[in-house]
Amino acid sequence: MARAFAQLGNPSSVHSCGRAARRIVEDARRRVAALVAVSPDSVVFTSGGTEANNLALCGAGRRRILASAIEHPSVLDAAAEVETIPVHDSGQVDLDALQAILGDGRDAIVSVMLANNETGVIQPVSRAAELAHQVGALFHCDCVQGVGRVPLDFAGLRADLLTLSAHKMGGPTGVGALIVAEDVALSPAIRGGGQERGRRSGTENLPGIAGFAAAAEAAATTLETVENLAALRDRMESEVLQRISGARVVGANVPRLANTSCIALPGVAAETQVMAMDLAGFAVSAGAACSSGKVRASHVLQAMGLQDDIAGCAIRISLGAGNDASEIERFVVAYSDFAARTGVSAA
Image (cartoon, rainbow, N blue to C red; front, side, top):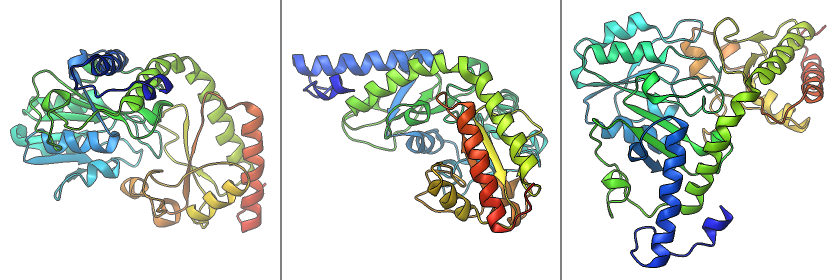
């Protein structure tokens, strides 16, 4: 990114500085494409996952938008009318309900995320895509949460459109990408200079795109840490449940991302937990971490059928490759002490 900051010139300019900037963009496009095994021509750089989701759902030209009830707000609020697909109490999308709602899907686009950002629950994406394609619908997958945590293959997921975000894989904020299948026409949401092959106008964020490329390459190597992260997560959850009798792990009985844990402390507001853990030196979140600082009952947990004493009292704890067993122990002690102070039963 530092080298890109030092590069003068607009990537659309034809002089030498512009051509040098263009080389940075196109090199980055190849590296991001390699992450999900697609042609570089399929990569459309955006300002992040939110823009990519909106571009996919509003630019695909389909009248109906169907999305699982646990999608990120940038999917559920992408249009005035989004038909929601219910989920099971496990947190996985109800495929029978999807099939029933779809009907004749030739005027529809279906959006099901790879893995939920709050619970980590992994979705049956390829099966959902198959159901969509059987009736002529397009299929979009928000893969923001799963990059670097599960192997990604665009063809294997059977998606027509796929969303990525750099900061979820250790890159900079403010840059992402939409992967578009070759046979999918896309109407731009931002018009102007015709950049990104006419699919997203605006001068490219050169340093951000360079950082995105570096993060994409690094994400392929982080898959090696998944087993260790899963062991740390399981240890943390086990000790929390042993020490706090009222605690509950959401989504524990279905496949989840190795780095994500959703723990509920009934009777203690999520916002209170977030603030207490922050004071103890731990950055946890409630709901979608990027919802403008708002803390409210999780729509994801409500969609799973959980009452407000759970949905409004759950936090998300995310682990990274740099975490170790000593940090897990310190968190468990801090969380248990906090639970005891609030009057929640603790061992």
